[in-house]
Amino acid sequence: MENEWEWELRAEKKWFQYGLTELWQCRGLLQSFVRKELTAGYQQTIMGVFWLVIQPILTTLFYFLVFSKIVKVSTDGAPPLLFYMSGALLWGYFSDCLTSTMYSFLHNAHIFNKVYFPRLIIPLSMVITHTVRTGIQFILFLIIYVNYWIFNDAVHPSSYIWLVPLTLFFTALLGMGLGMIVAVFMAKYRDLEQLMNFMLRLFMFVTPVVYPASIVPEKYKVLFWCNPLTPVIETFRLGFLHGGTIDNFYIFTGITSSLLIFFIGLTLFKFREIKVMDTI
Image 1 (cartoon, rainbow, N blue to C red):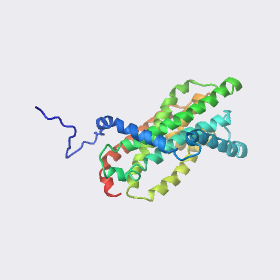
Image 2 (image 1 turned 30 degrees about the vertical axis):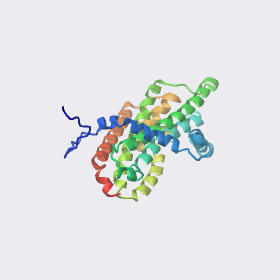
Image 3 (image 1 turned 45 degrees about the vertical axis):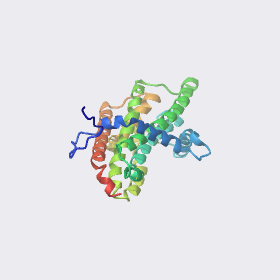
Image 4 (image 1 turned 180 degrees about the vertical axis):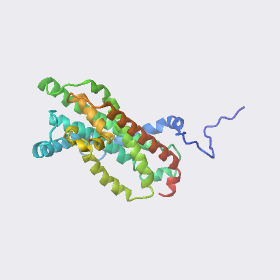
């Protein structure tokens, strides 16, 4: 009778082995982490899950008051509420994926030191959790959008709307990739946390969250479009809010940059997932 082995330990691991088969085998654990994050985040709160709706509304109203009424930033003819909500939606999704992923080792060291499971489950569960939350906020955006479309005739979808799922997908890849890179280094250099929080605030203002790409001076446009989030947000807005075109080259570079950052983060995370626990 042959012995069937469930685990196999090797002395060496090839660089291209990311443990996806092992990750699939532990999908039940992944579901448990996602369920825990979705429920635990709103326990002992007065508003509960309604914060998922309240937060984007309050953020949009703040942007509307400051940038539309006071600073009077152009929205290229798009309704200001939808313009700012679209920017807040994608930026919130990206920043949530990044910040939650970068704490993968620090916040879960007590689990990693006690039991083995694919470490990649933690950042992946965070991204899935924020995807569910962003999905609920996206439904709210669609409800407001349909009202503008039917009753005000202020917006018209374009062919770019078919690329919206891709914009959300690559936003998640970019946030998760950067988060895994930061997670590895932050386990050793704790002051990186303060630096990242500061850089994230600055990064928001070089991303077209509260302003359109059309107001960027010509001499800065090449640098502006090098930001992987710029084609993501602009494609999303072109699909829902107004006509126009976007250079396919910028879409390609944005996709390529997001994929490259994700695979760098994934490779670094898998290579250092064991050694990094010695420094925490």
